[in-house]
Every structure is written in structure tokens, then in C-alpha cells.
Length: 164
Length: 282
Image (cartoon, rainbow over all chains, first blue to last red; front, side, top):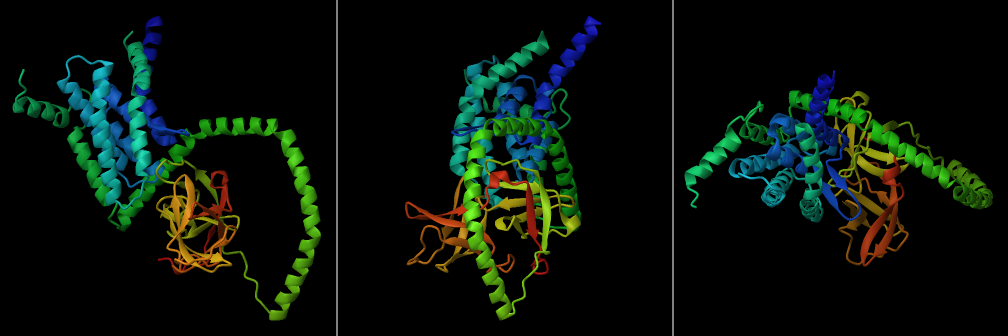
């Protein structure tokens, strides 16, 4: 019985990133917008799990979650999906070329991921004739980068729980 | 140590093209699919529109279910706040009630006078039956777009471009119609540009949204004489909205003509859709 309970707990914890991914997309909480700053939780979630435990977050699910975010936010279909896949691509590349993963190496490689993803986001919206607040987008990128270690710690805790 | 070009090539191939363990799709294929999806957004065909409407309707329903717990928590916290401010509210309402009682007598006189004058000029009073009510289904304020979803769509003959009102005040227009739902783009959105007319200064301009900030008036004549408190109405120049729908009043801040909306866009539960110009919208 204890073994079965442990298996259920293990399976549930393995599903946490996926559930979180779809929850924030459907609930429209992928960008947490507070009074003075905003953080893109979606980017951090995808980047961390693709880098650290890719089998828990399939690329197909990331694509679907991006499409859901597009619909919920009223953006052209494919904008968020594309930027999330770019984040996943940079994370995958970082995973392939990195031998030892530390918070610092994760954090530094998150910079090109953010830059490329936001550039693609900007281009997609520009060609779709959508106006967005670019200053907001810039501030959002800065704070997403700053808050990365906090979410990194939370996700590492979940990851360690799945291993224990 | 030197990194050869081959190593980078191998790393890129391994990252983008290979399907790693438990991955059913390669990243490259999904990126191409996303780009294709972006391009199909520009194509308007009946089957594609039907597919898009179906997907969007399904996602909106899913989002409605998923956001139910957080909505309940928000409602509960609102309920608690209302109870806590009950005493203050009572005081304010009492004061407001006495002010309104004083105004009633004056209003009765004006109404009587208005009716007599209307009879005198034989005016036909237009009916308000061309308004269709809808409920706000999802209000996920995106940091980039100010819009919400209402619970009616092409099933109730809703079309893109229709004016959306909160009571009698203009708040936005329909920008995306599905079968059971539609998206309303609010006047505060960056993408919103509405032709307006000011009163009493009678200047035509464009009301332009700025996200979190107040909408402003653009393309005003150089020597305009707009003053604080001037009313802003739809001009009806584009031929889709009816002219004379109230929007807000002018407030000039640092030489920028801003508009204070008559409706609080964060507090909207029900809206009216103006079907008056339904035949013009095709």
C-alpha cells in the first residue's frame, strides 16, 4: 500500500509542470502583472523544465499551451506558441552543450532565450499589425530575468520531490 | 579548448531535429507549424474561419471552467471587503440620497418641458429595441490587449465592428466573432481608434487607446478650443457606429487631451450590443 501511495505521489509530482503549464495558459496567468512590474511565468516554466527534465514537458504540450494563451489573450494564433518553442529550443541547446547545470549557468543562458523569444514575439505581432506596449515588454523581460532564481528554487524543490 | 564548427552543428541538430526521449514531435517541426499557423491567420476562408471559431469557443469554455475557482475566491474577497466598508457606504448613500431628492423636483420639471417640446416638433422617439444584451464570459485582461469575451456570437447575428455599450455608454467594439462567443476590444486598448466628436466644441478627432493609461484625442485641429469637461461622443463618421453614443468627458493634462470614460471598464458584467447598423456591416 505504501508503495502504491508513493507511486501515485510520484506520478502526480511528475504531472505538476504540465498541469501548471495548462493552468496558467487557460487562466490567463502566464504573465503576472503587478503594479510596478510583471513576470512571464510561462517562459520561466518552459525554460526550466525543458532544461532540467524535458521528459516532463513535451514540446507538443508547449505548443498547445501557447495556442491556448493566444486564444485567451486575443493574439493571432501561433504568436505565443512560437515564442515558447523558441524558449524551449534555446533551453534544449543549452542542455546539449552544458555538462554541469547550475543556477548561474541556467540564469545566464536564460538571457539569449528571453532576447530571441521576445524578438520573435515582437516580429510576429508587428507583421500581424498588432500594437503592443513595447516598454511593458522590455520591463517584463527584465523582471522575468530577475525573478528567475526564485521560481528556479520552487521548481527545483518540486524536481527533488519527484526524485526522493 | 577549441570548439569546431562540426560540434556546434551536431549540437544544433541534436537540439532541434532529433526527437528526444518521450518527445513525440521535433522542435523544428513544431516551430514550422507555429509559423504556418501565423500565416493562416491572414487567410479568410469559410472552413478556416469555422475551424478557428470552433477552437476558440472550445478554449473559452475550458478557460471558463479553469478560472472558476479563482473567480470564486475573488468574489469572496469582494464580499468580505463590501461587508467591511458597509458603514462608510451607508454614510455615502445617505448623503447621495438627500442630494438626489433635491434634484428630482428640478428633473421632473425638465422632463415635462421636454415632452411638451417634443410633442410640439412632432419628433419620433427612437426605440431602444436595437440593443442586444450579453454577459461578460471571460475577462482576462492581457497586459498587451484590453479586451474581454462575451457569451454571444454569430448565433445571435453578432458581426465584427459592432458597437458595444455599457448601459448607454460606448466601451468598445466587436473584433472577433465565433459561434457562441465574441471578443470585445475596449476603447482603452492600444489598437482601438474610434472617430469621435466633442460637445459643445464640435471638433472631430480620433479616440486612441493607450493600455493602462487614459485614452487620448488625436488628430484634433491645431486651434481647437476644447475645455475640461467637454463631452465626447461617437461621430458615426466611419458609418458603422451610430453617431452620438456617449463615451466620456475631456480632461486636459500637460497639454494632452485625455478622456475620462463614463464607464469603469474593470467593473463590467453585462453589455449591450448596438445592432442598429447591422446591414452596413458586411
